[in-house]
Image (cartoon, rainbow, N blue to C red):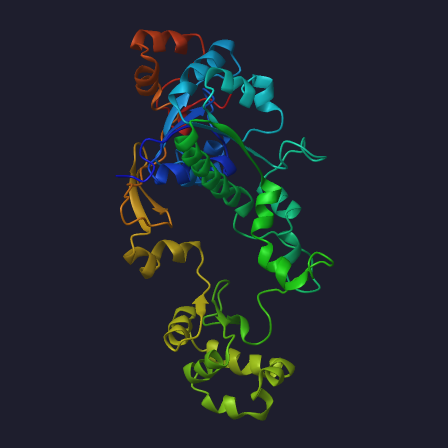
Length: 410
């Protein structure tokens, strides 16, 4: 039995901060119905279309295991339809820009009138209060506002954008946890509630170690440290010298230092007067870097990782996105999945990290736009095929199952 079997989510999310939240809940077994704009749908469907697929890879990666219905929320009849649906669900999640749900008259107070027990999740760039509340936000903006840019990059160089989109997906997973907590509370009390998260504040959660390492309890800015600290915590270039041919080494204890010397077949380095103590290794780090770099340069990143890790040294090859989809470890663990898309055929996606021993949920492809209009409206509201057709003719409900390349961009 899936862990969240019976939990029902009305998903008004778009792009990534919201869609990562509802996908996490879907992958744990919740029933998620995604409400999209007729004709164009979630803007994420059209993101990065230069790849030429019927649906963007961006959308496919954040919308598995959901149903899609299309309702024109800006039409009075569409708003009324959503409010009829709301009591059938436990949770509503939205991450529209500032003021959008208020303009649609679908904020927490409005939805609560239709469904007093609703758990209403709202994701905003800077929250619903404070001087920045009306500012628009995307992932890089949240990363800059949350401090992540400031600690990324080389010492003395400019701040840099971190690669992973933790401003979006990190916020989404935190919201998913909060919604599950609210759902458990509702099971005890019968009461719903408003759950709000700020992307800026969510990013600061991932900053805590960097804050602890360098800010002296908030009295100064933590400096940038590049890829590490000293000779024993850093990146080393590997053969054949490509853009991602590096291994990251983190030998932080005396035992790991011993293991490192053994792994690179240089046991005499332990007895070298320049490296006999941690203090001396720091003082002579340039010379030590040269010794280690000479070894890594003659090995591929995968060879270096294996030799170091098998000797007990924490180390990893720098795996790029191609490597991740082919990594033998991830493949053997079933983390790399091939799933069938309705119009695109087999597509390869990475899985869901948490593994519950008593809950198994198969990963399904992201839905075509409006694919479940008739199914959901019939099951939830008892609408007939003729009634759904009439709604479609009035522009309240969109066409069913249109792939991205054939639908309107209006």
